[in-house]
Amino acid sequence: MTQPPEFGSDNTNDQPTPDSPGSGEEQQVPEATPQWPSPPPPGPGENVPGSAEAAGYAGQPGQISQPGQPGQSEYPAYPPYPPPPAYGPAPQTSNNAVAALVLSIVSWVFCPIIPAIIALVFASKARREILASNGWVTGTGLVTSAKIVAWINIGFWAAMTIVWIFILVIVLISGPINAS
Image (cartoon, rainbow, N blue to C red; front, side, top):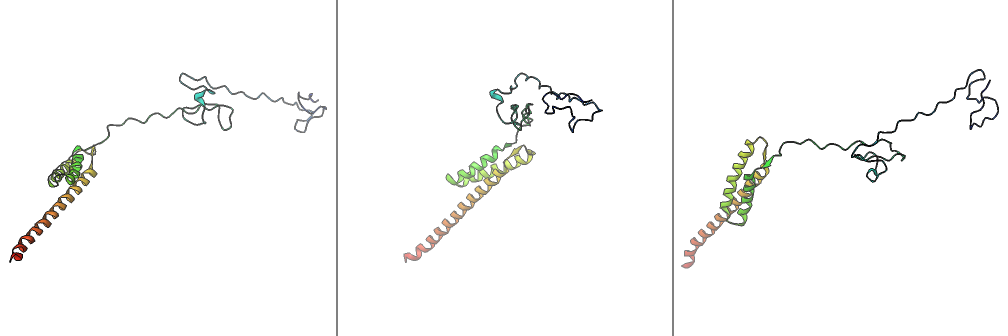
């Protein structure tokens, strides 16, 4: 015997539907759709879905997605990433290297030779300090540039001195020849 049609069914006659089991078998009533438990309530400091703080895209750290929108779940997004671990102190630039570079630049503006020689002394002192520090003191580039600028300055002024001496010697030699 067949069972009466279910409520809301279009099958009004007593004939079983093609999907239903035959007349000798019992028809099973579908079970209710399982209901998933709702997510736990937000703890202190968390955003409540639908609040102004929770507005945003799904997947943003620290944001809760709003349920019911396409492509978003009902569960909150992952918490924000923790801050990076604290490391030891960063390497420092050698003060001698900075002083050498400043002195080598000053040697172009003021008294030319003396600051350039002092810059070379500071540069060699800084180089030894950097090598002895095992990477905790930096400034190799400053030392190299200070040496280059100081040596160019010394070479320039040495060439200028040689040119002036050469001109002076020529004037002194040619002076008595023109006087006769």
